[in-house]
Image (tube, rainbow, N blue to C red; front, side, top):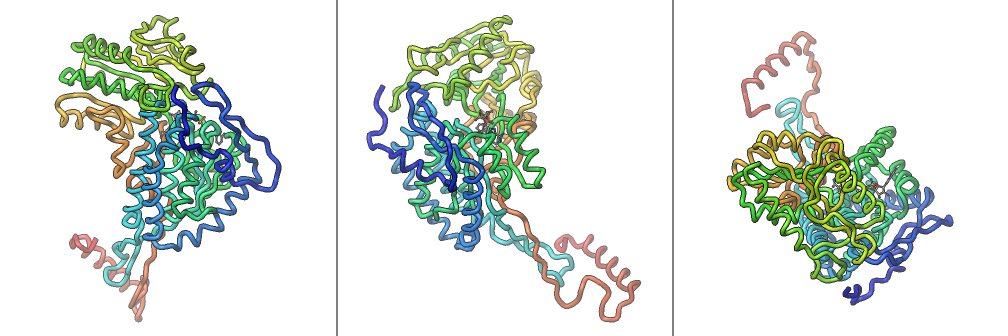
Length: 519
Ligand code: NAD
């Protein structure tokens, strides 16, 4: 294995960026998935730490919100440039903490730079006050103004520590909010690295605080204090967080799990579809919320597609390497490896067939599992409907488009989907029948995700309030209407009787109905 950290990252400097209160606390040891060796320890923040982080961010927020857009924009564009320049450092760190292949880690770097640029350039347009039609033509002048919600709490998972730790927070910051982030303990160092880089780019220290620790203690303390929560993680935890935030009437957005389908139609370019499936199923060893776990293939091409997919899957270079020589890396946690093994063995015991892969690879490292394809998966097997979040895909024959869509939709999840056909317009039409927050035609997952001008999120149990685009920043604001009334009130005046006022207003309302430009 090539060694990481040509230019060493100072772990103690990163840990020093955690916002700590005065109390004593325990620490959490973090291990590298590639080898199982300890990387270092992070503080287990308690309620007093979260109190302090929220208080610091809250105190810094008004001055931050008062800064001009161009001032704020400069910081995030500078961050964009620094991130691309310093990518080897963070690629090493992401790989060290997640065990993903470098080719998958780079997606996080590029994505974070693109989102920083996008919101840096666009935030002003999304947030500037907008003239709205007033209550009474000429007499009422009305503006919609966007007000920051205050302090936004982010709780993020371990699978995309840079992207999920930083990009939504950038939108919240550009909207004038303070931010407190609680990353997953397994990947806090990557998130801390990104926050340090933002500070280097000019972000005031207190406005973006980080508290490290577990979910039930540190995470819950943040849920109980932030003015708005953005949670990315599993659907069961998201549900609990939304309920708890709801008790305080704090707003909440949720980016949750998926069981993402891919549909291969009879006219698809099968080579391209098989390549796309390999990317979609095994990116990040399948530990990506939008990775593909189910493939529905029209019967007439089922065997050909399966052969192409199996052949490509068997060729995947699996292993630990801090360069681009490996295609797929390791699972990130022992719990994740257990879950993958349980899902596959449950399916095989109940009659499913392993077409490729199907076993762990301790010879490569403690958490490696082969990219795996199964057929014959049926209702009643855990793999059929539960999110596996690993390098495992089930392939099913279907009679045609209609069955494919019905089966794609037959799940409580609705995160991402993919359709393959040579008729792209027909594919885009079919996409509208799929109940998922994003649908890719002739790409596995990245076309929709990387179109950052358009919102991506979950339907059904996969989430609430998407990220990216206009929605991805406006959710961190509250709408305020400011209306200025002039010349006469919205009430009888200048000696009018209530009857005269009622007649006059009725006439006015009718006139507006027949004068489209007035309302
Ligand atoms: P998880 O829900 O177990 O944990 C996510 C985060 O929540 C972690 O920081 C954890 O410490 C914290 N947490 C756990 N319990 C908590 C509690 N009671 N109160 C407050 N915080 C708590 O999820 P995970 O296993 O880390 O991540 C995998 C899941 O995330 C998968 O389901 C995946 O699909 C989903 N995910 C979704 C997206 C998306 O954008 N939709 C992106 C990445 C991952």
